[in-house]
Image (cartoon, rainbow, N blue to C red):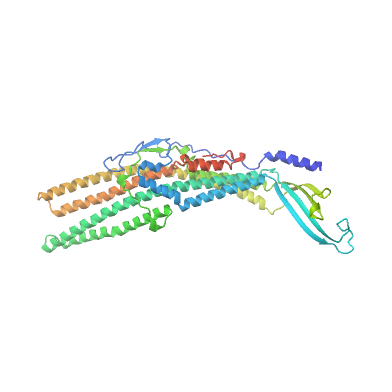
Length: 507
């Protein structure tokens, strides 16, 4: 018995050791910029909505409600509705709760398992039994037993700690997945609302174009009848009118699809699409754009943090696989009472107890445990490469958005210049027609060009607004400033963090 307890004590003293790698967060990327050369600001076209120059604040922080920088109450209301009702976000929140509960459930392995047993048996021994149980030698009797059983598996090689560490990391991954869903939702609502406003203006301008082309066609048909123009000119105008009319159904389809998407994002049926009561002119383009450093980006992008948590979980699983190949010690104790009558169960002389210790070690498993360890190491390598791919994708996402913003500014400037020139042309054509120096068809042609320039301008404005939204999303969306994502989620996650996971970078 003394040797048994000595072995048990020695195993407890060794419990501070956990096999497998101790996780360390990967180092941030050793780069300082997203593009080989980047400008500090975009070009400006101050005469149109969304034409202001945008300045990049390198190292600047992102506000929690970044969408409020557009100064649109309808947009704020749409995003608030979506964050409260979106089904995907609610599913991600439920997944996070399940992952946290699984992590808490895994902590039960740290404590002894205690069980209570009660049994009652009525027994009849055969006649002439050599050793009847009751002292009265009765062959028919009741046997009542009450006992408490305690078992405990000391975490000699850290199997339990690595398992809980993996569960904690999985809970962190679920947390960052929920954060990513939240950020993507707000960005998608903003972009969808912007597209709806743009499509409405494009449809209105295209309808004006169709009216102008129809008017021109009627005039040219009259001129054809009088012999002033040829049939070729009329046919060309008929083709142009048909092309304009053909573009309207596609625009209306896109508008309906965007409205249905907005309804779905807000957790509603397509027939209950919320109203996006604003136009592009009512939006204010954010002029001071924060631009996180690459080293900061990996510490705040939820998809990168999720990949890091998955890497942490894979690291812990390597320790689990190694520990499964090592011996396990089990300590057990039983205490109780057995009597022939229920009133005698807890009387003196009826009690019993027992202590035990057992060591179990795998000897031959047909290579199962060896290959499971190899698989865990390969899964860790896979998670490491996926983390690297996620980091590279995040940097590419920001770089692409910065280039898009630069080109959007150039495109908007050119579209604004074309729009202004078309208005001047229309004004001059109207004056010449009134003075008798030009025909009415020239006025209609100038008006047609003005509406076409207007459509291009609307498309350029929408692209600049949408890509500004994309930049906020690419930089992480400022979720760390939101109490419901940072403090609330962080506090709950911290309550499930053990000493073995202190190396994990908490954001």
